Length: 100
Image (tube, rainbow, N blue to C red; front, top):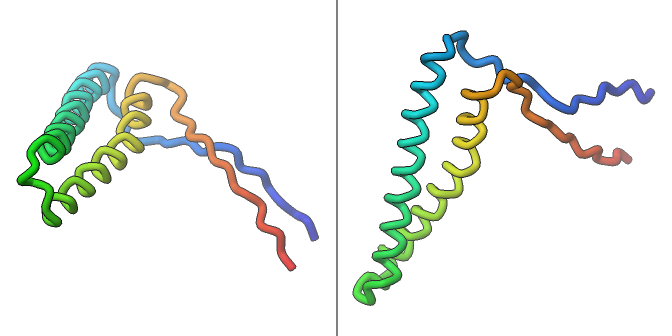
């Protein structure tokens, strides 16, 4: 009984909007992404440079900034690419888990 369908990608449909609005949204979200990266980088830089901020509270704040940078860098670039491309396919790999 090996009836399997191999799925390699799925298509993100989104909302049907015109190219002018897509370009506007691309610019807005690009600016927000850059501000997010710069803001978190400033937080990390200040914590690293000022010795008085080497306390547990600022340690956790620096970890939060790293998580925020990682999360934004994982999702936003694909969203920005989808604003500009007509092909909105997202690759999908499912690892086969052996069953006993």
